[in-house]
Length: 136
Figure (tube, rainbow, N blue to C red):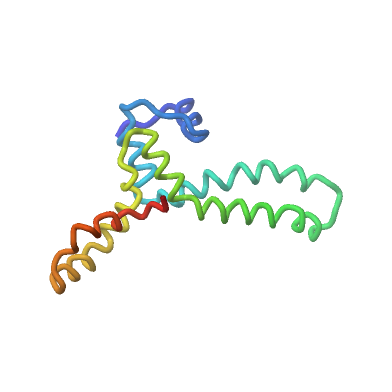
């Protein structure tokens, strides 16, 4: 699988679109195994860099934690809460199907859906819109 160059990767991290030749890499990065972990690592570093200078101020450990921990924890919680929305956006930005975000979960739970279909029959056509986990 072709990987982006260092400048391309840096631009990708900050929201730029990669060339079409790297679509497979983007698909694996955003919807493959470990995608949530990679997303969280990318979003954990910037607030850390912004909050680091506060630790240079003369104060006790308690005051440093009181200044930075709530902001950092909030940033991480927002990154986790919005990870699926952001990954859907990245897939759409690169011309891929946004529903690929749920691909791993669908494969993991396929046996449950197959058992349901075997017991109760196939789901009605009107229920197709519910397969999508998009909040919009």
